[in-house]
Length: 81
Image (cartoon, rainbow, N blue to C red; front, side):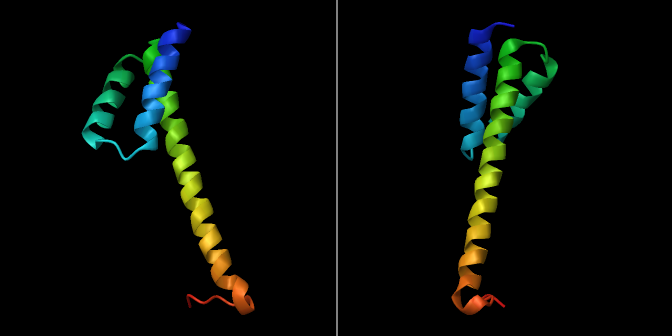
């Protein structure tokens, strides 16, 4: 595996996964990577994209949980209900 190509693919994939990038572009890149599964760049792109999306989902869950906990912290009751 070529480490430079993997790193370049990872960085591009991570950047696209981290932002709300153009879904058409993301879909095209995923199709290219699916066709070239053993290419270092494609593997890096796929891993970077998945890692960024996973981190975004985790941040959303943490944010949601903290909002819920803040709402319940006053007088130990849920203010949203």
